[in-house]
Length: 297
Image 1 (tube, rainbow, N blue to C red):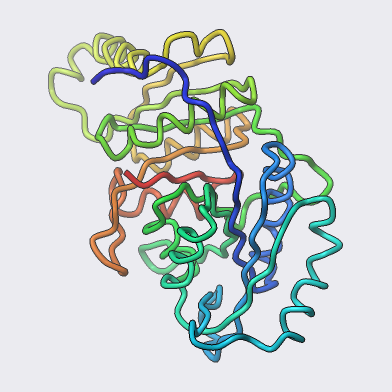
Image 2 (image 1 turned 180 degrees about the horizontal axis):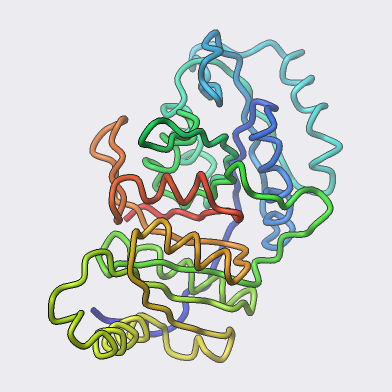
């Protein structure tokens, strides 16, 4: 595994913000505004009318052959105007399926980042997200910033991304998020913690755990671009346990502002694959006290 020669420059010119004006969606808006301010981004806000009241975030699709009533667009834009004042933005409104339109907007507007709020809810043995949020962060080609129900930024606290946690298991999918984590840390002069969680230690690792930890730290160090330490403070951690629990614990102890994870491409619309065990990314998004940035491998 070779590290990056230099830290890639980060560019977030276009942000997609899906909203249904729920509390979950509203919780994401301050982050949209803060990111747009940091990077001079243009925001595309999307709302849809849908007959399906069960979906936590409604589908976001135009019927491509028709145009929504102009009054609806005006009302939608007017409702967001005071909040997006000072940010370059546009508003789209429609009805239909979620992913078809989101994918089209990402391509047509050259979206660099999707910011989506979600309500997490626990089942008997699994964590769930709003169906639209699931589709977006599992299938989008661009990075997705998910704002879960335990994130407490609010409009009074500017989000500055000063402490970043990047978790990896060294698979290609997880390493796909490395460049973005390093770029943000460099841009924001942040503290960056690189974390690897050992879920099932081998017998030889238990005999000499420090040797394993030292070799793993060297592997983490090998991922770091040359010169990154000049722009941010780096630290390394190797822990053992359930990956989602260890990621959440590390973020909580550090007061992290952002968690960065890599995800595998979903095998289908209902696929839940991530670079970690199936529930890991979902548990982290649902339980994290800070936003979670996912990058599809």
